Length: 105
Image (tube, rainbow, N blue to C red):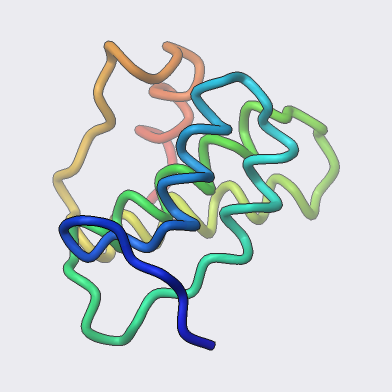
């Protein structure tokens, strides 16, 4: 379905999921971010941020079952497909997540 978009064409659901993530409510953020669907013509930067936040929310939840680990890895792999040289901002993401992000190919 159609989702509301904020300034710059960023879906409102992505912004809300980001706010929830940065408020430390990781499980809630993961649920919100999973519900975001981007249009096929969404800019690469918007797609990359969606996958990055999904990976970070799943990682921060840190329930180490296989399904969640696969989700984290799939989202990071999606970031790599969009921009192979991208690295998350160390001022924003934890050293543990940055190491994880760097390990996934």
